[in-house]
Length: 72
Image (cartoon, rainbow, N blue to C red; front, side):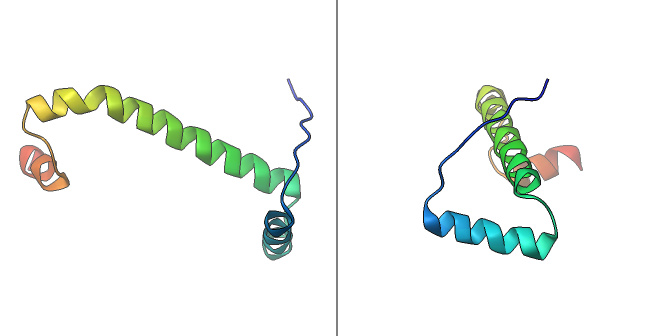
């Protein structure tokens, strides 16, 4: 299902968006959709990380190096 959403952007953000639209030869909708998808993916990752972190810490997996050592 597609919904139409209206948003207000500060002038500076509008100008930056227009620069990207021209450079990417994409529509404003495409650029904004991509930005929202990336934002939502980041939020999902952060939520998952928050759930998994206590289990990783309990196993002594604190840093990237710890994880690398564990899987090597």
